[in-house]
Length: 290
Image (cartoon, rainbow, N blue to C red; front, side, top):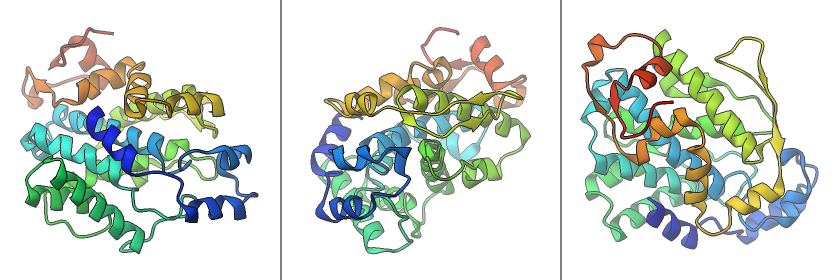
């Protein structure tokens, strides 16, 4: 994945003229509560490499959570499909000409992103073309014709990184996996959301505070730090983000090096919370208990 990310960031997510003009004309925008970031940015701030690297990271996290909960579509996924979903996560915003506004369905920007994704997968032989079509389109608002899990996981990973936002509140119901899940999976997702938010704060890329989803009466304070963000965007960007996210033992175990987990036990006999599951090592991650 690091090799794919390196190639993707060499080709995409540079400050195009349209985005430079947007930054210059929106000095009063609330982006990251810090006007200096727009004038000093080397890459897109809101929809750039840091954002899409985290989206790619979250895709195995969410997929492995589903596998652990017995999701039949998740259990059918191949490693090749999972990797292709991560690549689509990396490229889902690559066609944007606006960094601060939304990207409308079937817009020129979205079509460019899908085209970039398709061309990249074909050029790098990521996955068979039929799967590439389905997965690249699943990362957009377009029809994809593939398993529903492609769209649900990729878009939920994208929605999870709204935790970085400064100007509107994170809502877990925007995540398809959250809306469609029962109470048990939602409890697990609450833990994941809090862990992701805490890592974003440590990365200096999440200025808005968040009321904890997994612990009553706890508030996770926000923080924005241009120096920390700049260090993450230097050199191996995806590797830097991966290393930072892996400082959360829970996320690291679910991420599992970007590999699909293997269950020791059938989902039907799984009991207890997600954290209990990790501690008892009912999944084979090759990582130590925490």
